Length: 111
Length: 113
Image (cartoon, rainbow over all chains, first blue to last red; front, side, top):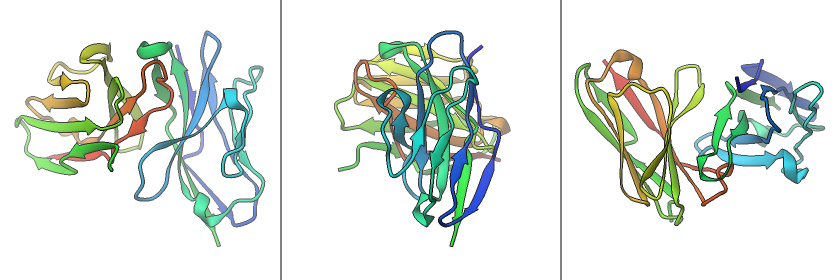
C-alpha cells in the first residue's frame, strides 16, 4: 500500500545549524514526491518536487529509491524556516492523481 | 485577490446537527479537493471533483456529501455530526492535469460538542 512516513513530529534546531526533515515512502510504482510547507498563519503550499531537482529557499531534497526516502535538507537553518512541513506522494496521474501526505513535522528554529 | 476561500473559518456545533462548509476558488482550476486534518495534524484526502464530476471518493462515511454546483465551488455537507468529525477541513484546487500542485484554502475548524 502507498504510504508516507515522517518519523519526527517536532524538530528543534538553532539558527545556523543544518536541518534534515526525514521522509520515507512505500509505493509500488515510480514515485513522485513533494514537500509542502505551512508557515504560521499562512496556507499550505508546495515547496518543492523531486523531479525539478531545484533548491527552494535553500532547501533541497533527493529521492533515494534504494532507501525509499526523500529527506528535506538545508545546510543553515533560519528562523523564518520555522513551519510545518509535509512530505507527499502522488498516487495516480492527471486529474485522478491524489496526494498522500505524511504526518507532518514541525520545524522550530531557535535564535 | 484570495485564491481559495472557505467559509466559515470556525464552526462549533452539537452532535447530531447537519452543517455545511463552502469553498470557492478564483484560479480557474478544474479540480477541487476536500481534506481532513485530524488532531494529530494528519492530512488525508476525502474527495476530489473535476469540472463538477466526482473523481476521488475515499473511504468516508456517507454522512459526508460533497456538492459542486460549478467548477469554481465545492461544498461539503455533513449530516448527523459526531464527536469524531471534529477536525480542520481544507479545500484545495489544482489545474487540469497538475494534481501535484494544489492550492489550499485557509481551513475550517469544526468542533463538535
